[in-house]
Image (cartoon, rainbow, N blue to C red; front, side, top):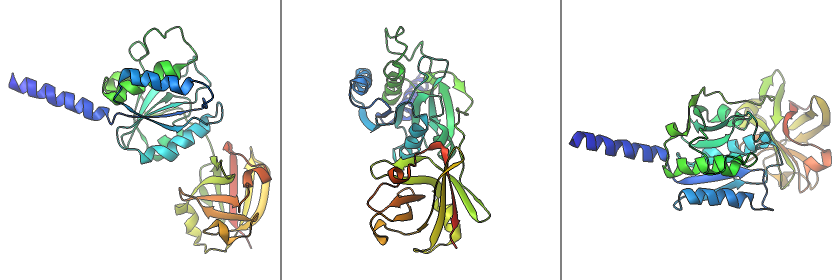
Length: 298
């Protein structure tokens, strides 16, 4: 009897430990002009008032699944194991797209529609497991006739139950192959004298253009500050920009309004105009259709 009791206690502790940190981080394209975000948080607190609720962002451009994917990749690694992310960029709400909870290989959980949002997390942190949400169990009571706010009725509710330890990860729903829906884009590659990559996102506040070309690849050229780069930017393979700029370590290394290439805070090659918006001036945006070619200028 003692052994059975001890085993039950250990199992409970394991479930609670695996459950988690009681942290829920919300991301959406809802904005903050209405009560949608507050409603999601209210549902979470209704599950457990002991939860700690935080925001990643609610300013994802409407329907922009790709940017939701990027902001997760940018943010998830800095949160502790057991953190639950509720990411709702869901233009297909109410359709046959799956609602899932992914467990990363570093131990965080992401509650989201399986619509491409997990693309960059899968490629960076890796997906250890993927489960489809069983809405017969993990759906807010009496919400079955609501078809357009799964962020509140399914995702916030399931995320809160998981983060608080009301359910274990296994109780989310049936296991799926750890192969979420992926968005195709230009991977960063070095091909001869040209580095090719994608423009996943803009540094919105300043209009700087961030690429997915990491320092490990870029530094193979062994450039020194001041060396010049030839930069070409494309949208759906149509050239939007071409120019020469120096590779520098600080914005102040060039005159105001002049272009520069630098490594951003994620150590990815980026382009800017000192104290101006590169994106606005040159009509550059971001997403899976935007690509870049970089070579050393003569």
